Image (tube, rainbow, N blue to C red):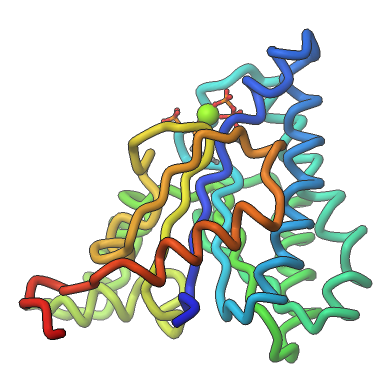
Length: 228
Ligand code: IPE
Ligand code: IPE
Ligand code: MG
C-alpha cells in the first residue's frame, strides 16, 4: 500500500551549493524547486499527507543571513504558489512554533492555510520553526492549562499541532544522514525510515517512487509478530 503520510527531512541544500562553489543560499533556492516537484509527485502517487521539514527550532543557530534568507524564501513561496495549490487542490498546513516567528511570515502562513483549507487533495504540512521536543512541550503545557492531572498518551496526541493527521508511515531523509534531528519525535515512533544519499536539490520524482516502493516491502510489526 502507498503510505498515507510521508515526512521528508529535506537535507543537503548547503552541500549542494558548496560543491558547486555557490553560496549556501543558492542551495536553498534549488531545494525549493525540488520541494515543488516532490509535492506534485506525492499527489500523483496518491499520498494523502506530506510533511516537509523546512526549518527546525535548532536552525536559528545558523548565520542571521542564512536564517533571514530561508524565512523570506518560505514567505514568498507561500504567496507565489497559491495558484499552484488551487489548481492541484492542495491544502497547506503548518506544524511548529508560530509564536517564535516574525509576524509577517506568521500571517503569510495563516493566509496560505486558510485559503486552502477547503481543498481535499494532498495535504502539505510545512514543519517550520518545528522541533519534536518543542511540539511535545507545547502539548504538555496545553494539558496543564486544561487541568488534566493524570494525562494518558492519547492526551498528548490530542494536544499536538495537528491531532487529526495520522502518524507518518514513512520518513525520508536525504543527504545520507542517519538521525532524526528532532523531527516528528512523537508521531514518528513507528515510522519506517528511508535514507537517501542524494542531496535534496538533486531529488526527483523517481526518488520518491523508489522510497515508496521500498516502503511497500517493509514488514511493519508495531511490536507484534509477523503474520504471513
Ligand atoms: C537543509 O539543507 C535545509 C535546512 C536545514 C533549512 P542544509 O542547509 O542543512 O544543507 P547541509 O546539510 O548544510 O548540506
Ligand atoms: C534538519 O536538517 C532540519 C531541516 C531539514 C529543516 P539539519 O541540517 O538542520 O540537521 P543536522 O544539523 O544535520 O542534524
Ligand atoms: Mg543539513
